[in-house]
Image 1 (cartoon, rainbow, N blue to C red):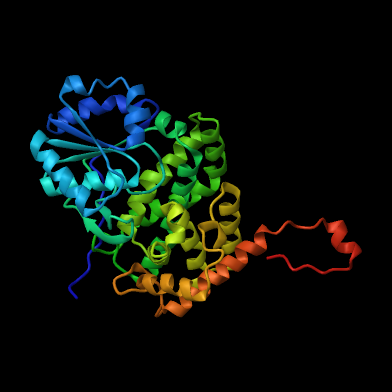
Image 2 (image 1 turned 90 degrees about the vertical axis):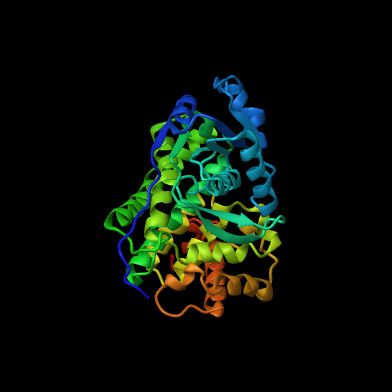
Length: 383
């Protein structure tokens, strides 16, 4: 092993606000002119018609994303880029659309502008992307030569999107501080091949504090489809703070457990951030977090509507054998779970998942009133 230096990576610029999409044509011009937009079907059907961008008149080609960031789709995009002689790529939509655009742009050696239309993951700012098999099974993390040249987040578009996306984004963001802390404790490498900077740790901590302070209010704003200060702060936490934090401070158990869970088809209906949130809870049990911290994080998940039990991610009926498959995958060589202190074995992960599930079920039980408890002479031990 050579010497490890402190390393951090950032997108070229980050722009967030209500109506920020209006900046897109000027950004395309600045970064090279001839643009190609990869957009999800929802963006083409619902978002672009509401945006007065006039892309056709500007010679910007809009290409529809076909649903999976897999090798087949990536080679189709490579052909489209050379056919159109695109000088700038724009990825517009959710995580998989953005990832496919990032990989395709990197292979073509052209800059990428990321326009997330939901705040569901911390992928937009990062210089890596996840490739899946055509059936949606996690295949590999691919690293680009640089982070996106620009990330453009329009709060009006995010506020109009379904609430479940914002909540899933909070689940993804929830892992940022705990994984950063683990990497810092063990001096494990971050996602850009170095040791965390103080800046990255501070950003990861701010991400967690913002979730606790503004998460519930942001969810309410999203339910009402309005842009508020709380929504503004949570979108920044989900997208910018979490993105900078995970990449420049590192990953650990929560994302490994997520990667293990994707091997079980029952979890495919749950979003990335929902599975990550359960990974956070299992990770806290795995690393023997203080009771008060466990209580805070479980309560936060309950309040915003993130999974706290195996049933919540489709695994209510899964026996130990099926869960062990996920645990083994979470502990595969090269998984960031090995950034946690001590040796982590699949058995430990299985126990942690079951412990998190038990805690989640315990905290979901309706509490009897105090009067009712007293009359039966029952002593209760609160968690």
